[in-house]
Image (cartoon, rainbow, N blue to C red; front, side):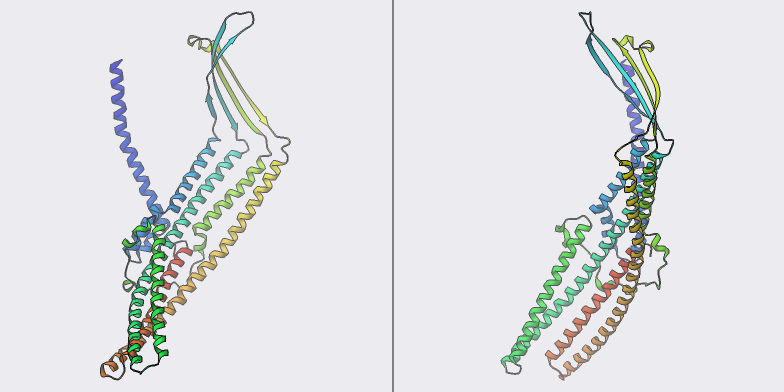
Length: 450
């Protein structure tokens, strides 16, 4: 016996050694496959074309750690389990029990013990395909959940991209505003000296002081907006806001100016949007639900089987002490308080609601794509105009600088020209980043298939 025990342990550990690594490899392969599927769903190659390793890292982190994405993954698992549970209704149900009994019979002074071990089986014959249709409903809902998750992934990475570029924009605006604030401080100091010498009025001094204070306030607003944007990015990538000072990003000056704007968008893109496909699957499932509700008016047919061994001791468990039966039943509820009628109407009502959402989504998708494309085109034109205005202002400032060096204009006049240059540069920064945000908007509205 001891030898048999040792051999059994050796076989068990050998089997564990063989199976465990294999299971780990399969689990690893499944994880890699899931990651590839997620990257395909968001068209990660599109983000790579932006040539920004910092942004790519934030997107990868969001896909891994964002809590909305984690919840969506759990919903997919939930849908798979619902499908698995529904498939079980297509199979026979088998159970076994144990019933110890101790009793005293009439005309006897002794108690007698018996032990029953019933084995029961039941199977609903799916002659009308009701359970099969219910399984198809769960399959459609599972596919719909996967498409909903794809749509969520696209929305999340779009938020990450938009937030990231807003931070880059605010970095540049703060840099310009710091220079502008310093210039206005210098203008105020020059006005103060001129006022003391009686060369400028007190009103000019007050206006210069006011402009300096407003520049400080604008700087504070930009800094506050950047902190809020960094906090928002932290939430999107599932990180603590305590780490926002460590967040790296590209410099605004290293961003490209070519936005590769398409002239038009193929309407076929709409039907490939994951939110559109998700509603298609919901509509499909709802249509099958109506068919199932109609089949609830048909009888249910079941096959029942029972085998029980009854004995007073372990040695009496044999075929002579067995009790068995095999039978069937057909049940048709005659009156349920119009519950089945109400259920059928409810399923039809739900179908109409989903159909309306489906048709609305089609219209909204067309609007969103048209708006995104138009916004990108218009903001690109505005960027080009602001770029020209900035170049003209740079030339004007260059001329003013030459005049100042020749003593033709005062330092105050030069600073005011420089102030105008900073203002137009801020407009240029805003216009350029609007184009980046519009580009991400077009990516999102086309379902990442631009």
